[in-house]
Length: 355
Image 1 (cartoon, rainbow, N blue to C red):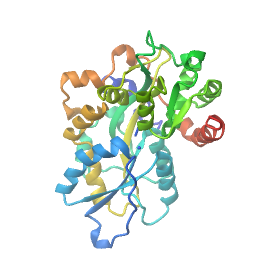
Image 2 (image 1 turned 90 degrees about the horizontal axis):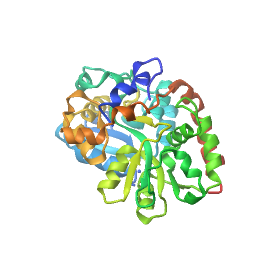
Image 3 (image 1 turned 30 degrees about the vertical axis):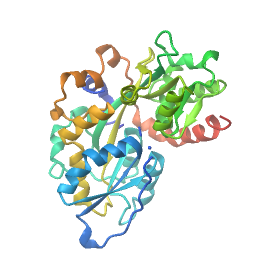
Image 4 (image 1 turned 135 degrees about the vertical axis):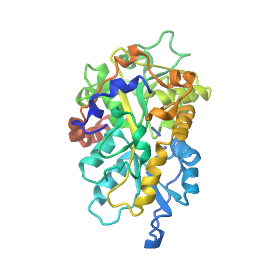
């Protein structure tokens, strides 16, 4: 999520009372532009799929009004984080705004790739909840990872992810490949861990591997597997569960007794942005109250700003109860940053191999 020395990483619990992913549109190549075009284009590095679609619907129009054309550099979070780190020493980078989950954004920050948000350039920062503030990013939307399950296949709610180890669910558990780090942390809770180490999750995944879980390339592919009946259970963002349920899938969600993990999807401007003025304009638009309400309604993600003013029914839908809040774990970002690459190697070379 954020700098562990910053209050954001240690005080998520308070914000969970307010709030309760992502990949299919092909990426567009970056085209070098002459200097005089510096203020009329912004290159946004993001996931594809539903998230990009909503960015196009609810963020891009305000940029059009400002005379700025939005170009999307679409790909997975690992590639985007790697690009930020690789380009940070270059005079001109290939992205103007990078969108990432909090764990990946912290990694980019530690590589000294990100500019510090300026309240004068991003006036909507004044409305951001204190728990989401960082010295390097713009908090866009928020949710938490939970168990999502096919309610037609479970007589009672699964109260622990350990149920995935039972023979009855052999081949019926699914994971989204792009969420490898969050998946590992989440299942590690069922193995007695906390959100400060990937090791319990790695141990649990190797035990689960015997039960032949499935790994899908995107969150949308996990939804398709639920729809076809191929899987009955997955760990996924609560916001996604709400979205899938609204689309007619027979799914429900539950925070297991061992707890869940939070997530904030954030935006940042690289220090070497080619179009910094347009980039900060886009960052400010991410915090616009109207756009925040649209994301809450359409995707089930909660706002990160005080002035979103969600209707009570929508607030209850995307939020968490007090009991659920007690089971949300907090990250140790420094430790997770230092071990994330090893977790990716484990995921690709040990867990996924042979599935």
